[in-house]
Length: 300
Ligand code: CUA
Image (cartoon, rainbow, N blue to C red):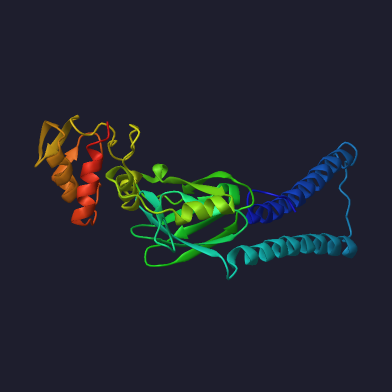
């Protein structure tokens, strides 16, 4: 078996390579015989077609060999499918919430993250759902993917073998922000994971702000580093000149604290020009709203 970054990588690759090798061998046999027949039974060599008697042996051989081959392909696929679909009982559970357009990973102790941190060598089970439309969680390096469906819980599992950071993509077209719906899986040593997992949550606005933005899905559409996503960036928000459409009229405003608060509470009251008006109303407690606004105004 091939080794890989996870226990599932080798399983999928083995079945895939086995099928590809079978196909390439069959392709070679068919192509070579075709060329040989073309030359050997050319019209110049055989001006008069002959009657060919059927051969039972040949019929049996070219029926039985491909049948055995496809049964083998099925067997490999089935055994690994069984393995990949059935998580072990002692797996670490992580709840995955997909939404337009970001991922939220919630751990049993209440920790919420936008990236998926996992320990090496321990089975991890993802329990996945969506709060809006169909999404699909895909970890290419691990060769696994599964749909996230509103009102349903689907699952995936894996054991990380190699430390590293791997891409997570959404592979179900889910709206304008689909291509931004990316995250990462970070596989870390068991000790590092324990340290991260049991770390006390921060209390300051600088620590809490990004956490809430992440947990509420804001960072799916708004970046903190100045890059444009589905919505405008949060960087340098306070004091920025912005063209907005308010009550059907276009005008220029300077973003201030009151505008930020108002926009969070009633996103459709003003649409920023150049961006689609798709922001949902996010349920927030007064405390969370205060923290977010206090945090956003600090982003220079
Ligand atoms: Cu979520 Cu595409």
